[in-house]
Amino acid sequence: MGVDYYNILKVNHSARDDDLKKAYKRLAMIWHPDKNPSARRDEAEAKFKRISEAYDVLSDPQKRQIYDLYGEEGLKSGKIPNSSYEASSSSSRPPHFYHQHPPNAASFRFNPRDAEDIYAEIFGSEAGGASAGHRTFRDASFRNAGGANGELRKAPAVENPLPCSLEDLCKGVKKKMRLSRNVYDASGWVVNDSSSWSKLELVGILKKECSESCRITSLCLCIHRDEFLSCFISVLKMRVVEEILPIEIKPGWKKGTKLTFPKKGNEEPGIIPADIIFVVEEKPHPLYKRDGNDLLVNQEITLLEALTGKTLDLTTLDGRSLMIPLTDIINPEHEIVVPNEGMPISKEPGKKGNLRLKLNVSYPSKLTAEQKSELKRVLDGVS
Image 1 (spheres, rainbow, N blue to C red):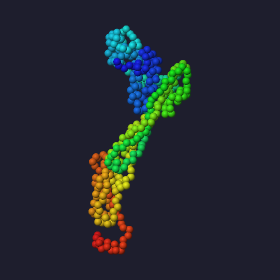
Image 2 (spheres, rainbow, N blue to C red; image 1 turned 30 degrees about the horizontal axis):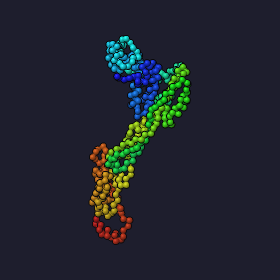
Image 3 (tube, rainbow, N blue to C red; image 1 turned 60 degrees about the vertical axis):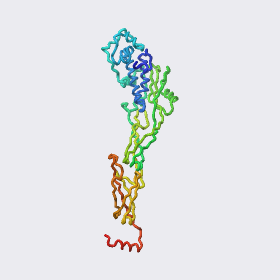
Image 4 (cartoon, one colour; image 1 turned 90 degrees about the vertical axis):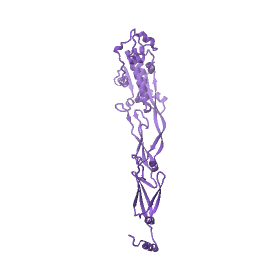
């Protein structure tokens, strides 16, 4: 059957221009994309376009006449039957205008108007150029909530620390972060009364109907010849939602690495939610210290071990046992480099930095005369 424009605007088939405009204004105030939170923006945009198209067709006498006779397909395709009797018998929709002869198909081409142009025409003219007999009051702070040009601005990013152990940064790990944030759901009320209301009185009505978690995003008070027509109060109700954000730490990530979750900040009217950014922080390790892609270890050995040798047994960050034999004489602050036993290089899969062992020789605090004599005997002649 095609689209039912009358049902979209919630008007009957005999609706006049004033009825159409009132219906459009009420629905446009609810479904304009700028008046809806980002989570519902796509849905709101689609509904706003359908509402605008319905108003465009039904408010234009020629488009409405063709639509009433031949439906959406005839309106948009231009395939209009030669006989009006054929059209009226094939359409289940009662015509608003009926003519003995169908409109001139050769001169008509369906050209839909832009949804924002319609919105600007209906609301813009009333806000800026209303006559003394027709006054419209709007809350400008919400009308242009996004900025001077009505464009949405984005909230600054919110950074949170993401503490990671060296083991996590070496092997990689998956984490789950719990996030609580405020979101808004669109709703509204239409007030119809023959008496006069002030904006303050209507705000009072809203406070009775809405909790402290509501925000007024639109307050439209319409008066014609000093007679109250209607008022639409658009509000956003705030609720707190919890989300679990999956985070995958890649092997080799470094301190300062950032992981961004777009638009996961608190929602505010007229503002694009902030990005939530997690920044990697490196926890201290009891044995290893990171230096770029290398791992540093300070190892203390005795003078005897420095002279006679030793095998070091280290547990790596990925849980292996690493045996490092010391066969040469070790000088104070001597450094041994073990290739490919450092941190993974994130941009070069399969490669690692080095493990650098700094050996500190521990000297005895005192020697007996006998020990000194024995050392002289053993080391005599050793260069």
